[in-house]
Length: 535
Image (tube, one colour):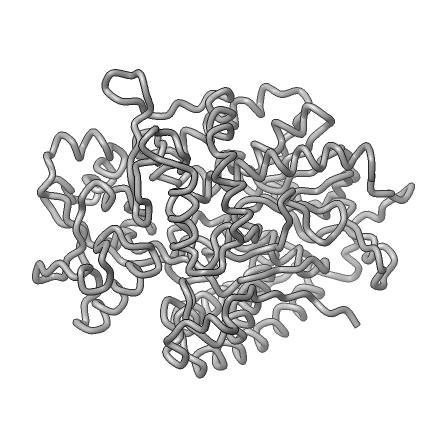
């Protein structure tokens, strides 16, 4: 079955849906999403979206904060572009129906502050900002006759000119993707003039993550296999504060809680962040995550505690209604109790390398949002810059892809091959998938986590190479399932993270190794770039 459209969007968070709404002005759009349309990392974003919206703030200040957090390797031109286009991007979201929280008077937006920011510039919708953004975008997409949504569909691989020719071609291009209809167990061919990866991050490659289950690195893995360049995969951000509770599935406690005065404490009540950074509890995330990791290992504790009990109870309940209610469901009253917290994999700062239009080096393929490496985040993402980046690049990519359809269209063959399962059969040994899945996530956490070493990375590489061989044999012998597709992608992403980490012989931002504990500004101020070599 072949489904044709002008634009193919893989992913349904703020990046994919914002792109779809703008591209739909110029043509037909197919949106492919693994679960129901609203299930994305965007939906779980609590804190907000950063933008200069106050007379007491400035573009220069936002740029400077981003550069400092990025530990010296942000692309400054990209940072300035994203920051300066922030206010218009916010207005676009408002026009699509997003309702940000206003002050008591209701005449201006309630701006809050998060770690690493020098001013209050975070627009939010209470403490469920992502849910509100997703709600508005989904409603707008549902009402647009030019957009067709395919829920419960998971992309398998990109369809490229090289794949059709069965050999490398000098001017490779993307023609769409093979996609599995999960409910019907049927592979469909999606053909498009422009294909957008907006598939999110790869938090599920780690044992502990606050990402949703859909975050299995699909876009990065598919792009790399197709020949696109990826970069800076060693920089995985670990959110410092996820709720540590046996019944909580990695529930994130927003950085905004610390922005409003919460203090990190050891079990004995000692506030410890002042010995790690002059901003104390408002230090950038990489520093806070390593500090918590060190405190836990030093004192043998399973967690540390987040304390906001000194703030007025009514203020806390009003500012964080969702966090308050969820914690209450676990028997924790954040107005009276310290919240037990631990770090968890949160955000991939690397990804598929793109230019300022969201273009990859594979013609016809774009990537935006967490799946992409734009150069904005450097070695560490500044809080609430991710939603901003996704929305800004959605506009850039939609404009460029729409123009390219007219001026430089990808030439498609008259017929495209449908998926061929060959002699593959249904598997009766799914234990192979679950075993490899669990093993990858555990050794990635232990060997390629917050603190790394040369020996740990070597062990991780040996394990992933063995697992890769097992997966490839299994993949080609059995009919594809969503679990097998995700496992294959997780293994690819794990190998890319390990490879990049091995290449960076220094500690910078989110990459910290005990064998090279210092920053190397002579050789380290470069991006770690990988591109698949085809024989």
